[in-house]
Image 1 (cartoon, rainbow, N blue to C red):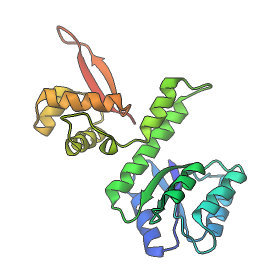
Image 2: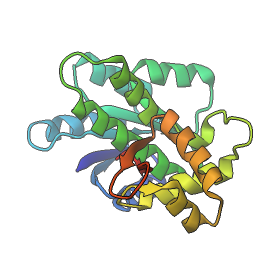
Image 3: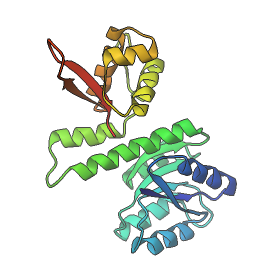
Image 4: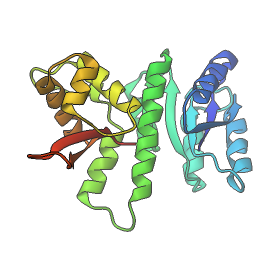
Length: 228
């Protein structure tokens, strides 16, 4: 389980985000903190037994900024991942958060779908890091970077639509076993050729695994599965 600390000075917002965490498979709420001091204390208190893996960090806190908290944690050598969740839109703040190790930046207000997307990307990123042993290859690095990218936000090749890409990505996330382009096309009522174009694009982004399926006469079919 990925243990998550929600840090926000608005109680209703903090409780909403905590509720979102509770709806995410593979994630566990470690607690809520409404100040930088309380967040720092919570991270230290949990470190020995059940370390916090991820902080959902608001940047505007009453006793210190979220950036100050992130800077303090990094200075103390505390290895916790951070997703900035804030209404702050200034580019300088975005750059500062990234420089301090924030791997995602989610601007308020947002719904559960946007929240889920960021945490799913984090889970995929975390899984990829655990697969790498020793020195990383270029493929390892590319897959780590791809794990944090959203296909809906990527510049699409001519002829591809973001809405269709979202639908295909969402469908793949719910399917446990690899599927062929034909099988996915039947599910979404589209042509096999269209489904295959989107699947190949997702594969190029590193979000989908592709493998041959043997066992039938003729050439093996290609199957696709969402990287988990």
